[in-house]
Amino acid sequence: MSDEAPVRKAKGTVFVQPEVCKGCSYCIEFCPTDCLEFGREFNAKGYHYPILGRPEDCTGCGLCGLYCPDFAIFGMRFKDLEAARAAAAATPPTR
Amino acid sequence: MSESTLNDDLDLSGLPLVDNPVMPYLRQERIPHIWCPGCGIGTTVNCFTRALEEAAKDLDKVAIVSGIGCTGRVAGYLNLDSFHTTHGRAIPFATGLKLANPDLSVVVYSGDGDLFAIGGNHFMHAARRNMDILVVCVNNFTYGMTGGQVAPTTPIGATQTTMPFGNFENPASLPFLADAAGATFVARWTVFHVRQLTRCFKEALGKKGFRFIEIMAPCPTLFLRRNRLGDGVDMVRQYKERSVLRNGADTKEVAVGMEGDIVVGTFVDRERPTWLDAMNSHFSSVLGDRYRTYGG
Image (cartoon, rainbow over the protein chains, first blue to last red):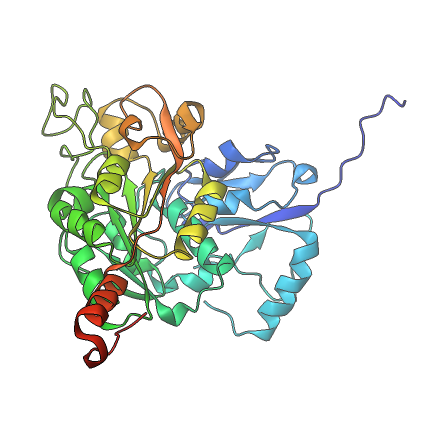
């Protein structure tokens, strides 16, 4: 056994829309791997919004997106990301 | 709205933007919504749209009806055929919608004050008749939009604007009421149980009859602040600690107080002929060939 901590590799990531976040901290509190934290930046309304503090721990489970009452964050696995990009490229943007 | 930004490492330049999975179901020109920071209603909307997606519903055949109140705004934010009715009259409107177009999947999405105080009689009779609608009640134990008055669900001892020395009125237990009135599917979840709630929505969307789902949600601005219960996230943490899963529990024993267990799960799941089925079978037997069956 080596003394070094095992190297973790992120399996997914999160996307944040800072301008709609209201800083309720649901995503930070209920993230199963505790990889989110409040950033130091404010958005236009004066709320701190979450950032991915420990990206290597993110599994892309998407629970943050399910909890977010303001539709400001969502997570995605890397393996699903390519398909989502292809779908996004094929359809006109929704906003 | 600003564009999605990926946190650190990955380079997004030149790549098409990935959208939040909930976005296609929302009227995006109305986002950001007006719900307070820490309010749980948005979370229930997430779960509902996820369930619509998983159930592969034809969105042209889903109609959503809301009454007045904070939860009543859900109809305005969802990009479905939606109607924002007068106070308490969401269920009568949904009944008419369902009977005029039986192909529709009609969902009533409203709050506890709208469904059980102002519209309490309609709830009872729609459940008694077994109208084929799904009723979603987001229960925040107070009247949020009008300023924190005592609602029919406010627990004994809770302080509200109209009860500054604490509430002494016995609250209604919504699953018990729905069960007694004859609902075919009765479930309760809290905002903490997002996965379970999504599954429950999906299951309920696939069933027939009067289906009722109660979702307990925090109201940080009025209920929590007046009772010094902390922020929205503190209440959701309490839901996590206090909730006990008891599927098939006797609905007499699922009342909620300021403290103690919150029983969650699917309490009732039974089969009864819907109002349309009952009407068709009744008139077919009475009138025979002279009657042409209507709807499903």
